[in-house]
Image 1: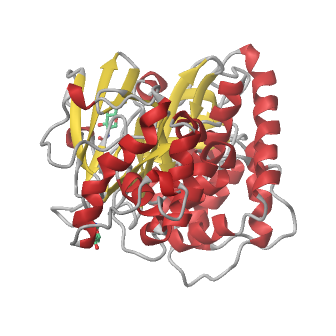
Image 2: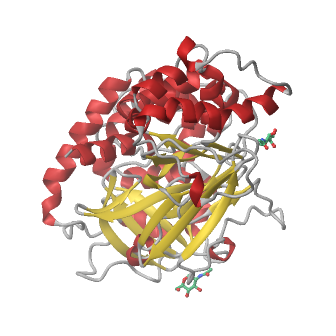
Image 3: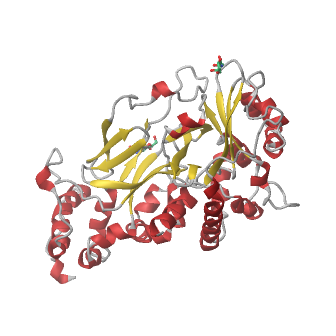
Length: 457
Ligand SMILES: *[C@@H]1O[C@H](CO)[C@@H](O)[C@H](O)[C@H]1NC(C)=O
Ligand SMILES: *[C@@H]1O[C@H](CO)[C@@H](O)[C@H](O)[C@H]1NC(C)=O
């Protein structure tokens, strides 16, 4: 149950697809001149109270679980009535099908407000697409009589429901993540992805949203129906803030060292990024002495060096895709990523990527193993990624159950003898200090004063 509620909370922040959230539109600032990513950010900033939000996620999740035992697909929802049992109509476009279905009126009304979205769903020339359409009941909790959210935000939401390419459900579930039509400057112009997993309770998108009808085929693609709306994820910083039960120590560390501010995508230019975010338990595993050291005034600079080894700038590594640097369109035509651009060849089962951390560009080696639809991610050969692909508006969060220990500064590679045993709690603080010390020296361009010893704390 603990595991489940954690997944739920992580989902709440990195998934975003709950109708409750939409009732928060009320408080969102409205300024139609801003580009939609700013609007999305503003919307997330307007979320008034994390606690109430998270508890509403919990309620939703509980409800979803209760109604889930009938199986992942609700066969009573036929998006195309009149073709008993046979889904779809391959003489019609996606747009025509959602226009005709009585279950998708709300979404298609919104589509009609945006010619560019309508064109995507009517397109039969350029490529097929997959539409994840929230059914009308997903919108039911939208408050009546309130002003609508900013247009840019609605546009971003609509784009986030469209995947380039034709993905029947079986193929969706063999993908861990898929790109959408929503390209984000803070992701280096790459597409914001959706996260798919199949579990005990059926097919889920971004942790929360449930697929309730699948494989409605159209002339220009395929449609799946969802029980809730997919909201583009907020920036990394916000995700961390939204999950205090998991990341409060990490957040405190980012704040006290000032690193969080330095990396804030509101302040600095961003081309995506990968954050290996240690859980509160990961910090606790270092033991009280090491924590007292790292969070002391004296230890702060060591903590900062340690944290830098968890951050990769401008390179975004998902379990099944790698955005390396900014996205360049050769033809300038905004062609979305296709399967051919994946770095992971479909047949290769184990793949390692070295990511340059902010700590002297010391590499973080990520090894991804794939077996059928199952992916495992390990960091530096030892640390398991507990929750993969936490989506954020400016990168991805890979949640680790252990704090990552940087390699010896002057060693070229990770060696087995570099293993850093945190079980031996006695010396952890001293060994951490010794391991991090050489990094502090280069950072300041001079020898750090090593007059102080841990005993002085
Ligand atoms: C869309 O998919 C259908 C079925 O696979 C195919 O016949 C059609 O040519 C595709 N359209 C485009 C534009 O690729
Ligand atoms: C990331 O990209 C931005 C924008 O191009 C650049 O300003 C920044 O220096 C890069 N960061 C690193 C660590 O390379």
